[in-house]
Length: 191
Image (cartoon, rainbow, N blue to C red):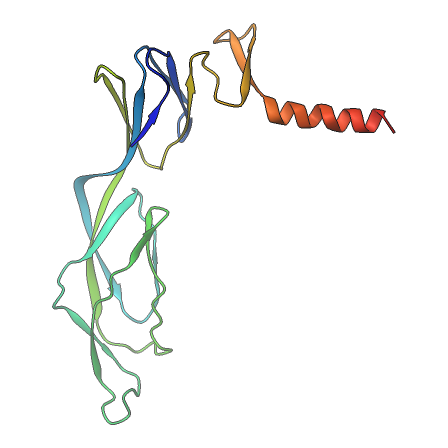
């Protein structure tokens, strides 16, 4: 949870992605927190243990557990040499970019026997912005939200507010970027 702006400042939280939205608060300071939200929706997924796990789902994956930790699969390779059948417990895959992934090496044997069943939980990301009086605005997204926070004049730090004909009636000009452009023009003209 991160705190923004000074007491009494008008504060603007601009959600940049996955959906554009502007949240305005009159009572700073505010806090913004993004957490992974799991509302309990899940699906069982069975994976044959003769290949890597790289599985996408229609919904955003937030966590995965082994459905039956006692469940095992049989490695059919020649290790150890005196016993070619080795029972293995099911590995737990990672959640990367909303899908499950396990850089599992079936040790070059496509004839491993058995599978592992996983419980794959779906959810999203919950952004909660809370002002000094405890007023909360919450939004839930399938992807992790990207946002900026502006204090006072509604422009992010490092920018300048200019009036503009289009909604919302102003624009924020990034000072460093404009300064660099002016410096480049001056260098070209000065040659």
